[in-house]
Image (tube, rainbow, N blue to C red; front, side):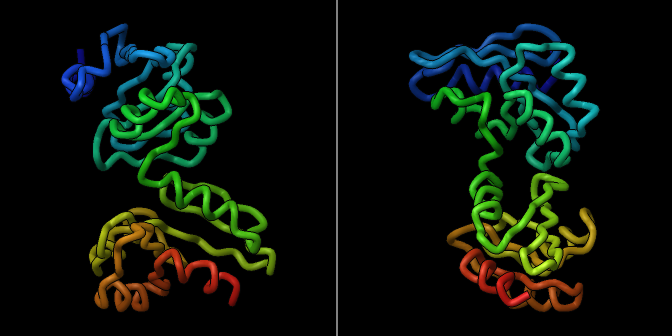
Length: 214
């Protein structure tokens, strides 16, 4: 049994109130049951980056899979892997997402808690013609004006210059670094770093108006 599976089982089984019963099945797959909700088969992955090839392998090995959990806190998900899982009715996200999905009974459609609201918001903007997800936190958005805008999401409470630089270093240049934390505020240094890197650092309230101006 790999380390991440061991930790997942321990954490779920010691949940406050003993809501969950988690047990090892095979490979990196566990089964979790809770009262009043469907049982959930989840693959607990230790990958730093989860790709299409990886998730195809998971679902081929275990066709009844309900959820893929990226257990590392710094796990990155490729957009085509996310699209594939959604098309197969398999949820995806971190350990917190898995716990919530088990309670809610929606593991098959659950999305990573950090990015779920913001990713839905992009698709709801009337000025957006199309949005392609490149990574869990990166979208290439085609506006109805014809402009294409690459948006990177930053979940930090107060993004710093390093937050913006790290985003660009890891995922390439973006037009907008979006501070998605509703209670956060970009620091002056992050805004300056964005200017140096050719991108705007924006909160949610400013994102739509900025895209409307393009």
